[in-house]
Image 1 (cartoon, helix red, strand yellow):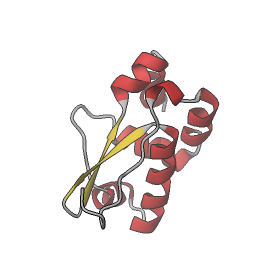
Image 2 (cartoon, rainbow, N blue to C red; image 1 turned 90 degrees about the vertical axis):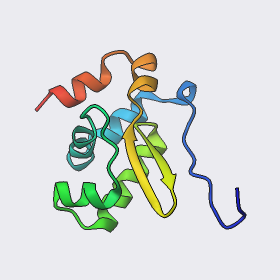
Image 3 (tube, rainbow, N blue to C red; image 1 turned 120 degrees about the horizontal axis):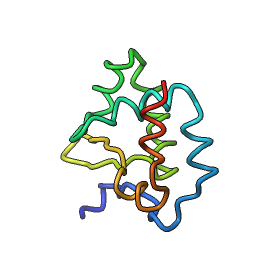
Image 4 (cartoon, rainbow, N blue to C red; image 1 turned 60 degrees about the vertical axis):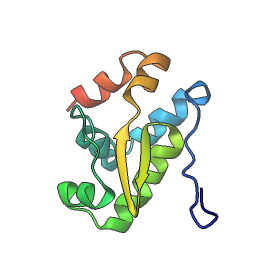
Length: 106
């Protein structure tokens, strides 16, 4: 990896902390982001999520960082783009049914 490219940190699934995850997704805006990412195969960019939710990109970026640091999402870099997805499999193994509860409760 070139020196000018910063690695995107994601916590290991074994380090997921349920109170941190619940506190993070307890924010109504972040819960909307989780729901926007819940479609199978969804991997939008921050800009696309901003458009979907009608948010400024800076606001979206902030909330996506919190979700990533809690272990809820994964950010994949491809060139200058950053693609966001739910860590559905990791969360399901660690906390079975959590994602279904989050995306199913309106």
